[in-house]
Length: 238
Length: 313
Image (cartoon, rainbow over all chains, first blue to last red):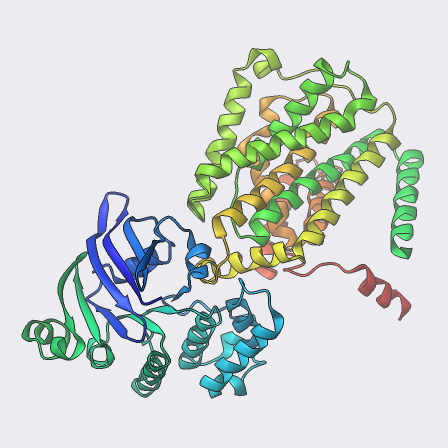
């Protein structure tokens, strides 16, 4: 899988148009970020891409010369196509242990040895989780819970990972640690699509970025370029 | 194996005791308890395990009751020994009705789902009220009954045990754990690859099946049903039993159904001039919810082995 191409994505909540026909793409081995203020349709876009919401428009997986339309698939189907979502507000299961939460991430995988290998991989990456592997997930700190949620999303061995507000409610130092992990993941060849309110940090690490405003993409470009763009500075970076 | 034999012995002992030492009044209450327990289990499966709030179980019960009654009278020549067949068909019809109901309504959740299921059950009731062939508001009369108490008791206990065993096995199966995941966080469950809409629908169909089973047995227990027997209040009573017992606890539902069936009857015989049970009973329920909001059993199950362990000490 080289990239995911989204064409004319439209999502409605009843009569309200939340996303009004946006087109964008994100690539493997790159970080793409989607920034915008509250109510711009960022979360809605991610939910639609993982089929949690019904939508119109096409979602195409590009792999070299072939492309496959997955816009008719349901949520498990899209996960099988290796596109995973780490939902907003983390969504971990508080009454299960860290290891159990990770195991749930491999829900579609039947191979037990593979699952334990994957769990070890996550523990390697997030050593804090390894220390707390038998602790109930609800007792973790916010940052650890976010790490757990990311680790859990990675348990399905995605090629593309979509993250909804990974910095929400975290201390700045933890946010930097987590974004460092994103860069590591990118260097391993994973494609990341990050939705963020914390625009400056997101733009710093992104190869490509889109600005979403009330359901439309108003600006796109390289992360660094947007970081120095007057309009972006005025609206999002002050 | 040993515990099944003990269980069977207890059932036989209870049945004979009820048959020889009590009058038909207490026997009838006991059968009502079985019906209530089946209905509470059925609702607990969808509301307790999967956290999908349904207020329409009286409608499913009505579908089961009318199907069973009509089939027995018109197809099976009004014979009591065909009752089990009719009840089984009633359950299948109710399961199918549940499937149809689930198609539009399970796009919603929470309070909205409760309102839609409530609407569905009212539709069923109003259709029955205006359907002259099944008696309309007069109700459906002279339905075949079991000629002896122990037959009725045996069949009832069998249905209750069947319902409990199936749900208990499902609760601790792969499917039951999927329901728990939906209960805890449906978005997280879905992004991990669980087909949430399909799982919810399946759970509702299973729940409807047993609601139909309970309804069918109810019709043959009373011998008379009318649309009024399946009003909104019945749905609420079923819900009270499920919540009182503990949402997610199957044995709790049976316990609560027992309390909710026998307590009003026990209070009826209090030697006060006024009908004080209408005050005592709600107060008990309110106190219960203040003292123990998670219900009698919470999410836990009454374990036979643990109980035996306590006896040995």
